[in-house]
Length: 108
Image (tube, rainbow, N blue to C red; front, side, top):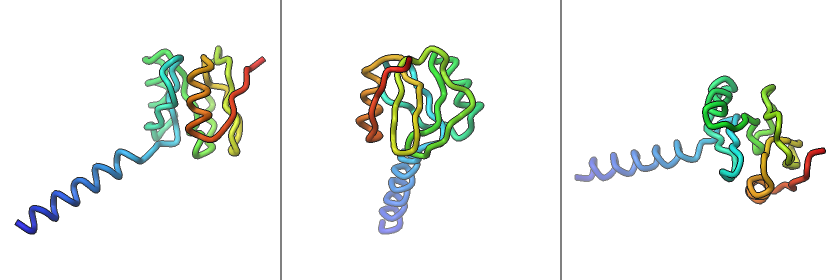
């Protein structure tokens, strides 16, 4: 019984830590909130972004800038690690600014 309890505790710990691991690349989709940072390579992020009709950006928390940025993104997130102009609407940019401790600006 003690071994079963320890095994269950270890499994829960592994699942919780896996859920909190963020990848260096994020998919952003117009109007769908903050970036989904679960991609560990730019190619898979770009494929997911294309399917979702969004864009692939570097994780603002990690300061990585991929070469593929959305063309029509009108809003920029400015953080201590840099600027990312990858947001299509003000609410999703504002949500990301709140989450990552940055500021949203309108792109010219």
